[in-house]
Image (cartoon, rainbow, N blue to C red; front, side):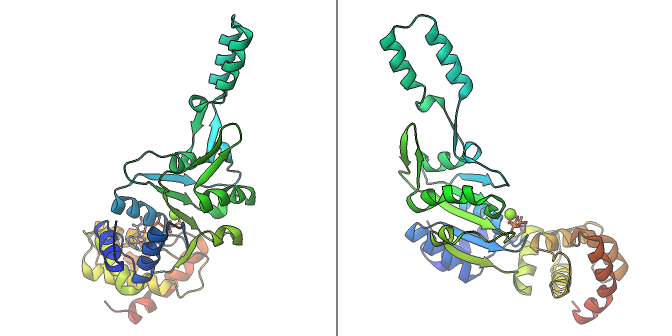
Length: 295
Ligand SMILES: Nc1ncnc2c1ncn2[C@@H]1O[C@H](COP(=O)(O)OP(=O)(O)OP(=O)(O)O)[C@@H](O)[C@H]1O
Ligand SMILES: [Mg+2]
């Protein structure tokens, strides 16, 4: 486990995840005081990737729960295996005594009939190293589900009515992410350390492109990162994230372009700009952006 902020930065860097000292500090605190980490930020700023990189840093298993509208306990935490329970009942019907039947009925809600979904898997883990639990895009779930998470986040426990409370012997390192498609409840935020991940500055974005796409030259990375930073200052329907910068640079490198020709930039900008309305505004702006940011 990393011991200092610098070590968090360095170890994440080894996993090709480049973060600033502020985020690294929050991560270190979360590890130390065992509090879930809630990261919000625009699309493509590295929220999901952070959890993946942390799992590698810690040498831990990554358990991922992708949230969506209507997600419920059966998909997120646990479910009884009805088919097996039914089979068990069938077998009982074929000639058990009354006493035998009572015991067997109790068995119906035993461990072997429980289907473990990601949350229970993370809480009831027997891993050599505590796993990383990624609860991705929590803002897509509904409030009911959020309410269920409160117990899990505060006590690292899940109550199963038929079985009792399952408590983590070693709590997972929990990372929740959100995009602010809706506000997450204060009660949930209170149980977490909160961090807003911003777009990286130019230097960091250049470095990210270089580490994610080593085939891209420093010069090209700088040109594309500069352009994308310029685009983020425009009034676009959807601003490009870091993933888009990497894709655009990679596309240009793939055809041997150096990023100085507006026509080639236009032809490849679909790697970074994904709405028709935006394509038009960006096309018009490219010559100016190139002039403003010579590489
Ligand atoms: N700090 C970073 N260091 C290295 N790579 C990064 C960083 N931030 C983003 N990336 C790159 O951007 C890609 C997209 O990041 P990620 O999927 O984590 O975004 P996200 O914030 O989860 O977006 P969304 O909200 O759309 O899910 C990563 O696969 C990685 O290549
Ligand atoms: Mg994500």
